[in-house]
Image (cartoon, rainbow, N blue to C red; front, side, top):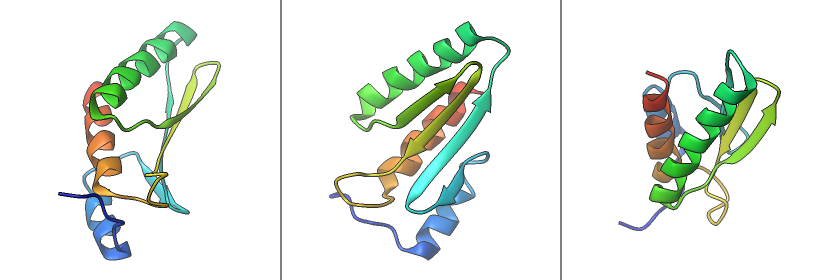
Length: 95
């Protein structure tokens, strides 16, 4: 099934399935703070493995112990199911 941009009502429904993530301006974002810098780096490396497997890569910012992830489907100019699927997998890392 080819990717397509999600309508606002579809985004709202999928947003329920990714607690902790915020939707704003065609982005799905997550801010997570970890006990230490190495813990934050471990999380980033796990996200990188998931992203590579999904062939869908988030923008990642690291500030000391805080990681900000931003998902969007750049080629489509907004949010698609690929963004929400990766967000669900990333949430699984934090369970």
